[in-house]
Structures are given as C-alpha cells and as structure tokens.
Amino acid sequence: MQLALNLNYLISRLRSILFFHWRYMHKRVATAAIVLTLLVFSSGSIAQVGVNLFDLQVTILDDGIDSVRFSYSNAMGEYKREYVQLKQGLFKIADSISQPTKIALKLPPQSAAGVKQRELEFYVVGGMNVARISFSKPTQTQWPDNPVQKDFIEFMARVSVKQSKIDSLQLAIFNMANAAPFRGDSTVASLVSRLDDLIVAAGRNAYVETAVRFIQSHPGSFISLQPFYVLSDQIGIDSLQVLFDGLKEEVRITRSGKLVAEHLASIGSSRIGSSLKGFKFTDLNGLALSLDSIVKTGPVLFDFWASWCGPCIADFPAVKRLLHQYESKGLKVVFVSIDGQKKKEWARAMGTSGIESYLNLLVDGNGVDALTRRLAVGAIPDKILFDTENRIVYRRVGAGTAELFKAIEKLFQ
Image (cartoon, rainbow, N blue to C red; front, side, top):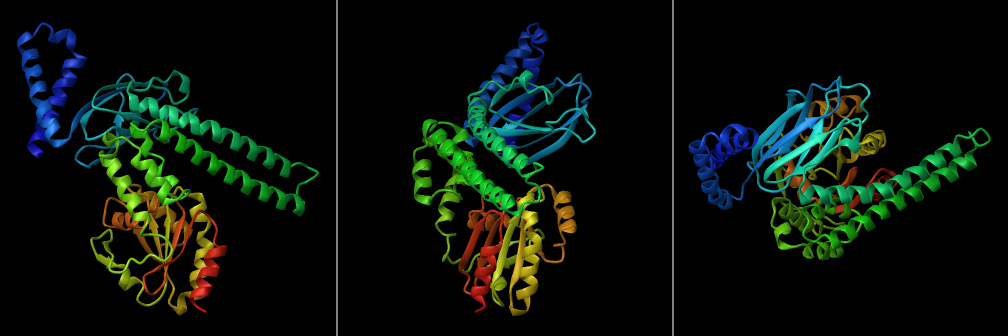
C-alpha cells in the first residue's frame, strides 16, 4: 500500500505539471503520453487502496497577506498543518485523500490588520480544486466547484439564517437590559436571564430542525454526516439511527460515515446507568489507564473541555470548589481537553484556569480518543460522573453545575 501511495503521490505531481503547464506540454507529445499512461495505471491502484489524488490551487485576493496556514487530514491519516508563503498571492497543494476533505485556512496574527474573518473552511475532492479567496470581502470568494462544497455552503447558509435571527433577539434584549431606566434593576435582570435562556433553547431547536431537514433531503451528501455529533446531544438515539440508516451507502461507508456509525453505537452504552467496567485507554505518554483503577477509591467526574470553549472554562471555578468540598471523601476530577494539535493553547488555558495541578488528558490522536468515542462525546462542555461501580450516574452537556452538585451530594449521602 505504501508503495502504491508513493507512486500515486508522484503521479499527482505529474498531474499538477500537466495541468499548470499545458502550454509547454503540447510540444512534448512523448512526455505527455508517458504522463497519461501513468494516470491510467494509477486509477487501478487508487481503487484498490481507496485513495484519491487531489490538487489544490488557492489565490488569496486580499492585499497585505504574504502567508497563510492550511490544515487537513490526508489519506494516510496524517494531519497536515503548516504555514506557506504566497507567491503572487498563490499557493498549491498536491496530496492524497480517501474521502471529501475539509481544508482550513487561517491567517497569521500580523496579516492584514483590517481583516475580521481570519479563518475559513471549504471542501476538496479528488482531482483539481481551484479557489479564489478573500478574507475581507467574502462575496468575491470563489470556492472549489464540487458538489460537496456546494452542499456545505447550502447547509451553512440555512444554519446562519436561523442564527442571525437568534443573534438579533439577543442583541435586542442586551440593549434593553442596559437601557438607562432599567440598568441595575433586579427584576429586569431576572427577566432578561429567562428570556436569554428561552432564546438559546430556540436557537438549539432551530439548529436541530434545520439539520434534520437537510439530512433527510440530502441522503447522498457527505455533508449530511456533519451534524450528527451535535444532534446526538439533542435528540434520541432511535431517531438518530433512523436518520443515519436513511443515508445512501456511499456516504455511510466513508471513513467519516464509519466514525458516525461508531459514535451512534457508543451512545447507547454511554447513557445514565451504563457501565464501562473493564474499559482501558492510554494517556499522552502511552501509559495504560483503566476506569476501574480510577474509580477504585471514589467517584470520578470527567470534564470534557477545550481552550476555545468559554462556557467550559467558566465552569472551572465551581468544579474546583466541588472538588475541594468532596476530595477528602474520595472524589476525583479528570479534565479532558479536545484541543488536539493546539498543545500550546491547551497548556496556556490550563495555567490561566488553575487546573494544571489536576489530572489532565488531551485528545490528540492518541489513546484518549478511545475514551471520547466510547463516551460519545460530541458538544462541550460535557461532564460525566461515575460512581465507584463504574456506572454513569450523571451527565450534562452544556454549562452549569447546580445539578452536578446535587448529583455528587446524593452519592455521598
């Protein structure tokens, strides 16, 4: 397989030469014939190993940007993340992928101070992909012309229409609460808090409705896999399974489709009352850990978070108070970050939040991934409480610790 992939990569480079320098190639009939022969030969090996070659050409239209960071995962499972210098606003990528793949572009902090949108995402497929991107003027952007990207744009447009209405309502309430006659009024503050909760719930329901309708109307779209992780915290497993089973086979058998299937299978075994007895995983250093040994001396709270998740970090002081109150009785807390490759951000957030002295795990393509999959962790913050019998006795997706305090108090009664 490795030999085939190396050959495919060479062929990919030749394909780029053929595409970008055709005006020279037409004079070199013999060379062109060799390249075309290689392309025909490669189609068999690609089919055998489930790999597609892709070329990407990106032109950045904004002035003052001389470098950009791109990131994506290739067919070998390698996470590519690097800065590239632009040449006349252009950069190119040639690699292999096993399914439609999301490319994330991010500007360095010093680039184009007037640019507000600093990170963009789009999908590429096998073959040639061309994009012309403006971070400052989105209407000038031309995305790669493929069905997956078109579905991605459609889905995000549907979601953003709903979200813009929610944002407008929240802004109106915020302005009302800060109006001169009401500022500091406890009655108004209480009403605003209740209204804000209702609006957040309405936004969540709007996303669920939009996502479900998109999946049902696009059973053959790769993008239909995208909402499942968020939906798993909002609707029942039976409804999720019906949605997934309704997708076409070519979508379900992709790598992402198989991960969603695994995620749905794990949901049924990660509900309240479920036991993870005997479950083992490894930490960042390859050290073997087991839930049995962790919960042996008392209940354990797993707090899933990320450095970029404000609500997650906002709950840390309450979680630390909780630990201080019950640690002598055997309670332990394990903070599990899903920051992935962002290890510097993870370390910085641990320090500023004051949790670096506790047991911390990082999901970074390591053994901790098995834990997050087994617990069907999707949206964060996600707090999961185990008793000493290795059973899940409490779980909450979203901010807030009042119910958690009650659940822990009940354990120690």
